[in-house]
Structures are given as structure tokens and as C-alpha cells.
Length: 253
Length: 364
Image (cartoon, rainbow over all chains, first blue to last red; front, side, top):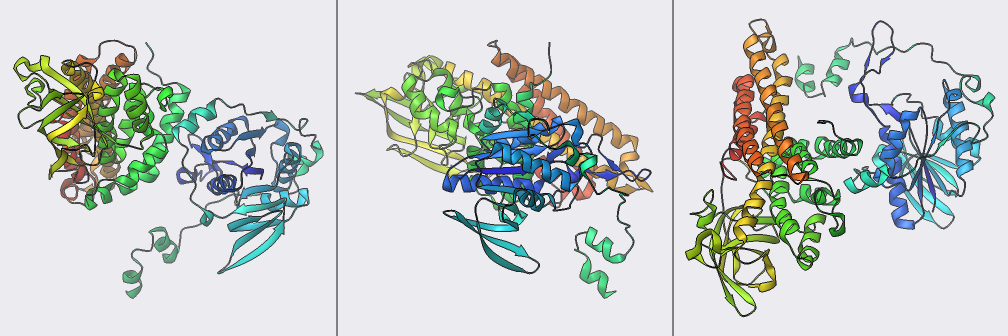
């Protein structure tokens, strides 16, 4: 079973702040990490590989430093990694991103399953995974909790609001991993060392024969108008921020 | 002169730091309270290849140096000093087998130690022989193709939980240090049992047991190095062990400093955070300075070892300096926390108890 995992490098959200003047993310000095849901996606792929054999390829679109995230995916146990990086990709929204990733997945080829994290910690759209499935014309199951492969079919238990749903779909297919799906493994030191020795090819738009009109700003119908931190005003919000430990006492007043 | 780590080292240390922050540190208080040997942590370190750091690749290790081993130990000690101590004591079996073991011994014993499948321990200390290593009374007598061991070791870290022991005994007590011989002894050897597990001021989860040898039969091929050359084995092992003790102290002191510098701005007295008072700032500055001095003294001793230079003197200096520094820094960390630092609501009271160990063990 050959699996492609799509991952994104994001700023470490535990160390992020928003510049009150400009309303933009302060990215200076903030370490980058693999989007945490994508770690669940990697773990799911590695577990499936351990059970059914095959290979796991990590794929990412991003600036050259996204190679670090791919290197970490290799350290966790992925067999190969590919980076799509091109200046013409700057400003890509979820539509353009899913188009580019789908093109790259087709170039890699021979896949049975694509796994994405359910959403990215920075953009939070949860659109890229489903977008890739649409572009590839394959079935998809979002918010996966459990998966079982049965020949050319797979059963997926999905987490819905307050309930579960188990569906069956034909392979090749795409799933997006929920954080409750598994506990991502740490990379062992042997893995870290072996990952350093692996080549990570960087593909440009030309390499994947993508239509430049569908990439970057020109391929992106949406724009971010404004980013702002949520106002911290109500008593309830402050309670939630303080981990609810004082709730009963404060409420009884 | 170059004080930087390579990219590979930085990636390895970053991976270890992640494991420490996410897995070890959150459980450190529980390890201390539960008081049971931290097998969960140890199995995890084994799975993530941490026990193989300094062991050559041909025996299943990562083929890195003592400096790499030390930095990993520093991170472990800062996150969970008990787990760091297990890691440190493990090397005391791994290292002499690496340095003095025959090919067969390395295949048989170094390989499972490197993978962490088996934990190691080093038995030198006796009721009458610790810093005075040459006074070892445990007797080894040749009987056919076996040595018969009789005697008692005390305070042995990992004792009882470890499966592979490097034991220093004497084949000719009248010759003192020149009769000393090192043996590899497996747990389960007939006549080899465990006695009292010491109740200590700290580290209730760390085993420090008596090893009791009553006519224990150890095969002749388990002599480590040569007969009557055990003093050299012991001294070399203690050299590496002192690097381990020094770096463990540095890690623990760093944890205490981190706790203090996080606490000071949050505590207000006389209308301002105590971190605004120069007396507190001086304390923090002194703590940071002495940690840094101890760290680099230790790194330089480890680096000398990796360069094939003599390092025993530097290791001893690092051990003395770092252990005294650690007690001082942990004491100041409690002081900065004031009354709260004396309670178990904050980790510094544990650090303070743990610090004193470094000031005592492995010679001074």
C-alpha cells in the first residue's frame, strides 16, 4: 500500500503573537514545526505501512525551509520526501494549493491513499485535503478516527459533531486525520541521522507541469482582508483562558 | 577552536529536547512521588536509540562521541533527573565493555546495552571502598574455568533492575590495586543476589541496591580486560562517569534556573515583581554564569576524551565544580521562590534534594 502524506510547515502556535499595530503574525524568532494534525497523518501512514507494507512519501509545498519539516517526516519513518517550491507559488490560497499538490501527487503516481491533517494550525481552513481529492477525482473521508483496509476498499470511522460515522470507499482515496486518530511517534535518533542522508528533491511548477495561471495569486480567488486577535472581554472567555479551574466558585458568587 | 555543534548534532539534540519536553518533564514529579523505577521512560529511551549514543555502529550503536552522550544526558537530567541518572549509570557498564571488552564480550553484552534491551550497572563501591577504590574487598578466586566471587557492593545505581553488571573484585587482596580485576556478571548468576535498596534523601525511583556475591560462579571469559588490570578499568570508567555526573549536575541546575527565572517576574512584593529587585537579579546572574562555566568545563572534558586526549583530570575538575555549582544554584532557586519553593507545589524543592547527590557520588 503506497501512501502519500501531505504536510505543512507552520509557526509553533504555542509561541505565536499578533502585532497589535499591524494585525499580522509576529513570525520573527518563532520556531517552525510540522502542523500538528499532519503529524497524526504521518503516524496514520506509518501504522498502515507497518500493517500492510508499501511506502510512505511525504509531500509539502512551501518555501525552501519547509525541507526541515520533510526531514522530520523522514526521521519519523517516511521513506521518501518531495518539496514543491517555486516563487510563483507565493500567495496561493487553498484552491491553488490543492491544485498544485494534486499535480505533484499525480507526478509521484502509484498511490493507494493520500493522507492530510484535518486542517492547518495557522490557516485553519480544512479545505486543502478535500480540495486535493476533488482535483484528483478520488473519494475522500475527512476527520478520520480509525481506518481499516480491505483489499481495494477501506473503511473509515469519521468523527462528526457528537457522533461517529463509518463509511466505506474505494481506493485510491484521500483521508484527513483527526488528532484523536493516534499519538504521533517521536523520531528516534537513528531516524534523525538516517534522514540527514536522504535526498529531498525540490520540484518547481515546471517539474510538475502545473498551469501557472492556476497557481499563486493568479490562481487564488480568495484574499485575506484582515487578521485580528479575538477580543478578550467577557467573564466566560477569561474563565476558559484560565482552564476552567475556578468555574464553580466564581459562578456561585 | 570552535565552540559550535554540527548541524547533525543540533538535529539530534533538538529531537532529544522534544522528547524531554513532551514526555519526560511532565511526568518528573510523578516519578518522584510514585517512587518506582521509571521503566516506561527507560523503554521509551531505548526505542528512540538513546542508549546507543556513544556505542560504535558495528555493535548497534549510533557511533557518536562522549560529548554527544553528555549533551543528551544534560537534557535528560534537566527534564527528569531520575531518568538522567539511569542513563548515566547505564554508561558505566557500557563504557568499560566498549573500551576493554573482547569481540565476543562486545557482541554478547554491548549490543543489548546499546539497544537498551538490557540495562547496565557498575559495581565498585563497598562499605569500606568508594573514593578509596583500591580497598575493594570483594574476592575473586579462580576455580577451573570459573571465578568464585564473594563480597558485597553497596549503593549500586540500577542495582537489581540492571541485567548486565561490571563488577570490580580482587584476585589478590594482598597486592591491593594490583590484584583488582573487572568482571562482567549477569543478573541471574547463581550466588549473585540483591540486598537493601537504599532509602535516600531524593530519587526514590532510582534503585541503589546492595549486590551480594556468595560463591557466585562467573565464567573465566567474563574477565573484562586482563586479570589484575581492574584498577585501570575502574579508573577509566570513573573518568567517563565523572563527565556524566558533571553534566547531570549542569542539567539539573539549568532546570532550577529556568524555574527561578520563570517565577521571579510573577511574584510581586513591595509593589513590584521580585525580578525587579537587584538582589534577585544578582542571584539569577550568578546562577546563569556558574551554570555556563560548569557546562563548558564539562564539554571540554568530554571533547578531550573524544579527541583521544587525556581527560580524567578535566573530568574530575568538572565533576567537583559542577556538583558544587548545582547545590548552590538549586538552593538559590528555592530562595527565589521563597516559602512556595519549599513546598511540593513547585519543582525546586525536588531539585534541591536531588542536587546534593552530585556533590557526593563518584568521588570528590
